[in-house]
Image (cartoon, rainbow, N blue to C red; front, side):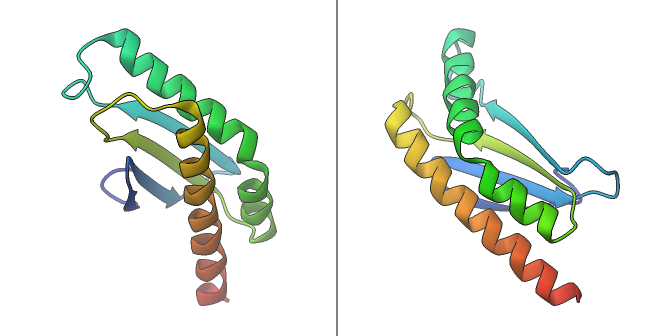
Length: 112
């Protein structure tokens, strides 16, 4: 994913994504750096908050991926220096998903 895919940064997240050949539809993963957060409890909290914000807003991206007949794998890496607040993570995740929808729609136009 990290070598063959594409990425963009939407602080405090870095997003890696790529289109797969296997029929997975939409797949997501989450990570946080040990360098910035030495305690596992902090990294787990970041991933939990990010997953929940994604889960509540993923339907529009899922519909876009299915409508374009694509299989998309996405990995969200939290690169911020401070622990996120859920409300901020929710708003940021919504913006990220809108950008991913735009990217999948543009790629569909380019490949038709």
